[in-house]
Image (cartoon, rainbow, N blue to C red; front, side, top):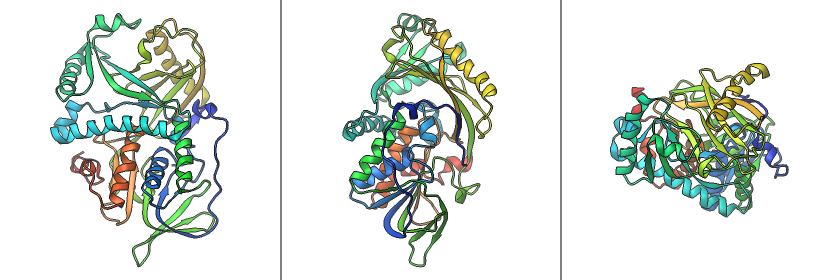
Length: 409
């Protein structure tokens, strides 16, 4: 899928200068080849470089130029599927292990942000997850009890607790602590630069058009410019399902989602704690603030993967997101500055696809379907690096491409 978004993106305008990389024009041999220079690709390159494993990142366009640029930068350990529902799906120990891994990944993203030595606008945040309707309260309370019983940092707020802090009232809400926000565009560029400093090779404008397995088990990638890369291991970090897998292993839905960023808001005092805000409705809307005082919001998912090119039709959707902001925060009346829509993927069991190709030795996937893509990318970089090193990872069975929940979905 070539065109992943349409409209005016906010994040690329927050970073005017960054490193660029030349296309690959000569043949080479490397231990690990990473296809894709977005969040997953940059994080894999960084993690492999930290472990001293030679790698190359091959990006057909520009680093952070695909889905990363349309990412809204919310980092939450809660997932599109509640912990209580995930327990019903895969069992208590596995579900809690997965949620714990998401919680840990946010702390690791915090630590990495500090290591990078660049301002990636990382900030620790709490989240308000409110009931969109009164009938959602029982499942919200069940989720709170499940999270609390397993030691996660959560509170349950009644309507009066919400209205005491925010200029709106909802039937109930879970507050989760330990979440965060980041500027994904700045973060990926900083991660790529750090990976390059540690020895990873990076090439933009390098489209992989063929992948074959050689007699000795190595993989040969051919580029559109005629160069070839021979690698022991290949990681597909392309965001969504590669052509090689289409219809064979992965059961997933590709949709489009809409997002906005306002002009700078003169009044954000009513936004308690700069919390990340989302809701129980499906599809859900969500919102956050930015370091320069804007409000960023997203949602209104539609059942088609093709970005909407019409400015008029896009504005019909994005104006609804803008109205949601003004309804919740009447003092925040700044006009829209950025409007876009982008392809968004969801797996049938609400978990990402990470790990080995079950039928193709030496091939791995980091496909972060779902609303927690950045968190999944952090997990994927470590899981796949461990597998390349011959180390078992505790999440490998939960997120593997041939897991039982996909066969049942």
